[in-house]
Structure formats: structure tokens, C-alpha cells
Length: 540
Image 1 (cartoon, rainbow, N blue to C red):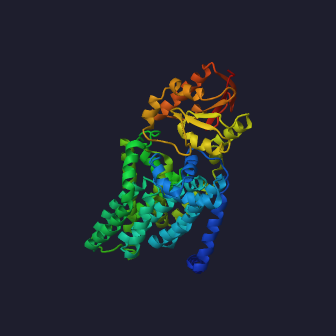
Image 2 (tube, one colour):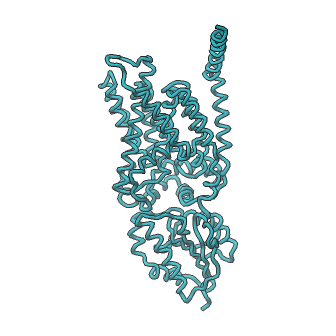
Image 3 (cartoon, helix red, strand yellow):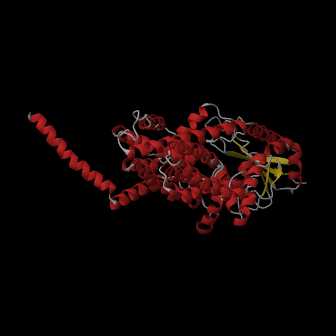
């Protein structure tokens, strides 16, 4: 009896403690302070590699953003992307400058903003427990940590993807019409940020079917959907001609068709992309499955009440949204390959939101998994960020040589030219790629690039470039370090072949003398990026 009494007393003592914890967690001042603390910790985590050098795509970002604002949409006909991120980056650079840390700071801001937005989204849809889980996971999510320190649109796209999922659930699943306009706005911003957001919006249409099936006011739901999606379509319509041009002439020639494993890859990358991702998917998936368990026959609502029934409908809609949008992206890449792990930014927000709901429903097990995920995810990813490209180092070594105004830089990996130009700006170099002279190397011209590269034989292309140089001037041949790239697409295989052919052609040109080559790595592990070979035009 004494032991039973002690147990009852212990339970009674724990209940007030739990009540105090719950009161603290739900009070506005405590919530604000806790979220500020998470943001501060995440800021520390996501600025360890803030000054890492740019890689190919970051050079493109800064190059495109350097154009006058009104010219950016036209420039993007060569690139293949929508204009919103570049327009924002243009304004950001005007204020803080084009340096690595400065431009990475924009992405850091987007990644940090995801923390309170994730808290609001999950809490408003599934309660305080889900809100705090979402905030904690958003604060250390490895995909967000990496892309917070990249001058690209992926942190912004993750934020917008989360907002699309949350506002959709409020507007069409919980039927709060106040969210119709916000949904239309964030969906429009998303499709103007990345083309894969079109798959996300298409996924919301599948989720709309799920919401319609569970709705008691189907006619009103259809009317609201027509208004919201009609607004998105009308706002996006001016960009459609450019999108169609890009689809026909740019695309992603560097990409290969994903196999069936690509579907799993998409979910795992969105769920963290490191050792914790499978655990997140399995346990959160089990929680969602338990939440979606069919109601007892004849029951109007869940045994746990209308709140649990609303969560079930939200989870079902989010599951449909994620499943259909991932499948559409995969199917599209079977027809026109455009598959890259960084594009999974589109799915990070919805996966984070649904996963938080699943972990919240798993209760104690969910909390244990969150702790494990924080352990796995709390990494600044400095190594990966600092070794993504050696172009900055190679450009610095080029600048140390007796080279400069009028000398020719040739990149046989054409899309490296904007980042080379970024690091060699002010030196007065002329630029070319495997297809010939490039007048404006700030942007990569992807239009029909495979056909143009195939038609550009190195002997015929190299000769007029060398002819334009005076005795004593230099040709700096910049090639991809081929051992670091697992290229399989027809375009990238051709880039590899052209790189070898260009070096052979310059070596055989009697007018040129090879004077230097770097970096040298012998049989060791080569850096990821490029190597440079310097030739000098001999005197006449």
C-alpha cells in the first residue's frame, strides 16, 4: 500500500509540473523568447561557412543579379529560371554588396525565417506539440543549413513551399477563407522563384480533391478554389511565354533521368538528407499512418474529438500534396531530365510540416526521435561548403601570374565562366568557352547548348581566338577536374570530351608555349572544381 501511495503522490506531483511546462510553452512571452533562442542558435549554426567560395550556380546568381532590374527577365531566357530570386538578390547586392558573406546572408535570413513560420504553421494546424517540433527541426535541418550559406534561391523556395502548404491547409482543408488570398500570393511567389514550384502547385490540386471529398460544403470549396487558382494563373500568365521558350531551348542538359530510387531520394533529401532522415521518415510516417487510421463505422468525428479529426484531414491533404508533387517532378524528368537534389527545396517545407504532425502524434517516441534528429542534424556542414569548388583559389593563383588585360581565359566547362569572371573581374581579361568568344560572361547561355557545343570543333574554334592575341599574351585554359565529376548526361559527356580535345589542340599549336599548370594533385584526392593551364603566345 505504501508503494501505491508513493506512486499516486509521485503522479500528482508530476501533473502540476507538466501543467507548468505546458503553461510556459504556450505563453506568448515564453514562446517569443524560445523562438528567439532557436533563431540565435540556428544563426550560429548557419554562419560557420558564410565566407565559403562560390561554385558554378552562385557565380550565375551574382552575374544575373548584376544586370539592371528591368533586364533580368530577358536575360533569363538564356538561363531557364524564373526572376523573383534574382530581383531580390539585385536589391540586396545594391545595399550590402556582391561578396560571398554578403550574398550568403540573404539565404541565411530566409532559412532563419523558416523557424517561426514552421512553428506557426504546425501549431495552427496540429497544436503546440507539433509547432515546437517543427521549430526545432527547422532550426537544424541539414538541407536548410547548407542552403542558408549558398547564393541561390533554395532557402527562399523552402520557405515559400512551407507557406504554400500551410495556407492551403488553412484555406481549403480547415476552410478558413481568410487564407485564400495569402495562398494565392505565396503560390505565385513560389512559381516565380523556381520552376519546380509548378509541381508543388499541381500537388495542391491533388490535395484539393482530398479536401473536397471530406468537405460538407463542396460547392463553396470549388468556388474558392476557382478564385485562388485563377488569381495564381492570371498573375503567372505574363511569364508563360518565357517558360515555354526556356522549356524548348534551355532545360537542364547536364541532368540525367532519375531511376525509381529518385522517388525515395526526394523524400529523404527533404527529410534531412543525412543519417537521421530514414528515422524521421519511418517514425513520422508511422505517426501519420496512425493519425489516418479509419474512424469507427458510423462515427461522424474521430473518437478524440473534432480537433483530431481536423488534424487527420490536414495530414491526408499534405500527404497527397507531397506524393503527387514528387511523382510529377519525377515523371517530368523522365521526359526532359531536370533532376537535382537541391531542387528538393520545393518539398522541404511540406515534408517538415507533415513530419512534425506525425512526430507529435507519436507522442513520447516522437520527442525521443526529435532529440536524436537534433544530435544528427546539428552540424554546420563546413566541410561540404568549403570544398564545393576551388574556383576562388584557382582564380587567385591566376591573378598572381604575370597575366592581365587582353589575355584570354577559356573555360571548357562553359557554365564555370560566370564564377571565373566574378573572381577575375577587374583584371581586363577576355573570356571564351568551348564554343567561342563570350562577350558577356556574367550569364551562361543555355540555349540549345548541346547542339552548339557539338558543332564547335576545338581546332576550328581555338584558331581564331589565338589569332586575336599578340606575341607575349597568355591563353589560360580552365578545365573541369574530370575525376571529381560522375557525368552521365550526353551534354556533360561532351564537355568532358571537349576539355581533353582543347588541351590537345593548344599543346599542338606551334604558336603557344606551355608555362604553368595548377593545381597539382598527383595521385592524391583532387579538389572539386577546375584546373588551369597557362600558355604564352611566342614572339613573331
